[in-house]
Amino acid sequence: MSGPDSSAGSGRPGTFFPWADPFVYNAREHGLAGDGVTNDQPALQALVDTLGAACADDGQPRTIYCPSGRYSIRDSATAWRSGISLIGAGRSATRFLLANPGDRTVCTPLAWFTIEQHGASPSRHIADCTFACFEIDGSGVELEEYDPYSKGLGLQYVLRGIFRDLYIHDVASTGFGCDFLQDTLVENVLTVHCGRLDPGESMGGAGIGIGVGGWGSIERCTISACTAVDNGTNGIFVELQDADWAPTRGIRVVGCHTEGNRFGISDWGADGLVVSGCTMLANLQAGYDVSALGPSGVAGRGGVVTGCIIEDNVTDGVAVGNTPGPYTFAANRISRNGRYGYWQHNLDSGRQAVAADVIIDGNEFWGNGLDGITVDSPLTDPTVTNNRFRNNGRRCEHEYDDAGESVSYTPLSVVDIAADWRPNGHKGKCVTAADQEALVVGNSRTELKLAPRRPGSPTAWSDGPPPSGARYRLPGAPEVRAGIRLAAGTDSATICGNRAWDSQPDKTQTHGLVITDSGDCHAGFVHDNDLLGNAEGTSRFDTVPSEGCWYQNPGLDDSGRPGSLPTPEKGSRDESPDP
Image 1 (cartoon, rainbow, N blue to C red):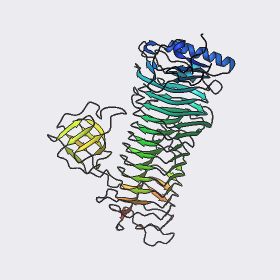
Image 2: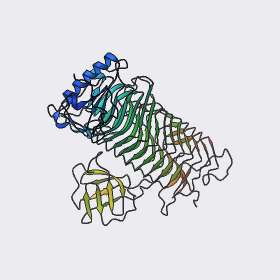
Image 3: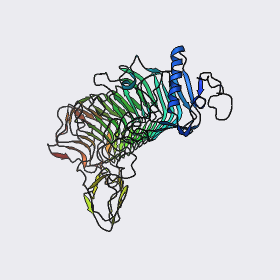
Image 4: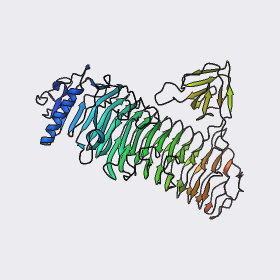
């Protein structure tokens, strides 16, 4: 092998490093062409192996510097070595083009080191590696059958890693798919349209996916300032990889943006995941998801979500299920989502848990399609305090159908010039036309705007837009659209200091507080809630609250005396007048 890159730091144009470093190797001077034609994978593998052996011998990490260029990586993944970093000249300047024209069954991540292929483990890990300042383009990979290992980066058991300033796009499976990251930083990673070949419900297919649990109960990893757009499953997720492992603490997601994915950010098995200052917008299923969808079937618990904007997601803003709790949502704006602002539920495939100690405090819930909060699975000791529920229940339009000359279709809309709908009155509904279904993200008086069929798709229709004039149908609106709706057993709840009202001239939020015939509020401490100003009344109790302490809830009880309980008959509504 020739020696280190003596020109690094020489001051000539295009040089990345501002000082000479004998352990920095210019890839162009060690066999890589960077011309977009030559297959650079064999030369990259040889250089990684040679430098990795040298690092193992003397303990000195090495860096491969790839100047601006188009580096073709074809038909084989590059097995990585400890102590070897890969640095480019910047996003869109240094581009790695992944492809597998020689064998459509082969995955070609730029770098991988895994349990299955390489025996990765806590005692056999890679350490002190930095990947920075380059682009991975996965659009050249085609597979006979979807494979979740067809990632952009696929490393497991990484110690003291840094992943920074990367642009990863159009990868067949997960763009950044690295597991068990100890003392590691993932920063300013942009992932776009990854999971390109994901059929829809398979493993992988995310922008940033991080498996946890391999190092034990604590893994110190921070995901910061990352952006994930139009990825097949999650924008960003962490998932426990083995049901027998302890859920992992120490993971933080800070200042990230997720948009147009199936889920925005998901917690599928961490303990104490911290998510702060993030934006989760226009994702197709939920902005934030806690559930048992990961490979271990274990949902997250103990998490804190704070200071986030969770808005315009096609179905729910926040979906929480299968968790034993606790969980905290504080000081977030959860608005304009297609169904619920917050949905407590249990997936049938996961643990049917009674969630304890869920805290929902100081959040803004407004403009959501149905309820601000819906509880569809049991809670014990929940705390719902100091929230504002305003102008929810936007999905208020009646059933509607039409056909004929007034009706036309585009890939992402239905137009009916004869209609006169309330703006966003069909938000979140499913429209049926020509035996196809599509989800409505919003509407004007004459146009339904539709969600793409899957992340990144240019159309909402599985078989293309229906022909002009074809009949379409929209379902009606549910009778009850509340600030808070309890449709499952809720025990020892603290519900206080909330305000639930509708400030619109034509109100859509029917009630402040609803307990359905399948719900309950037992031994609740419910006080100082302002439930005045909704479309139909302050409350509706199809199940009368039992025991507990209710007082000073304007419009709900008139006594104001501590210890009083509301007493509407079962199946009736509290018709306390609203101003």
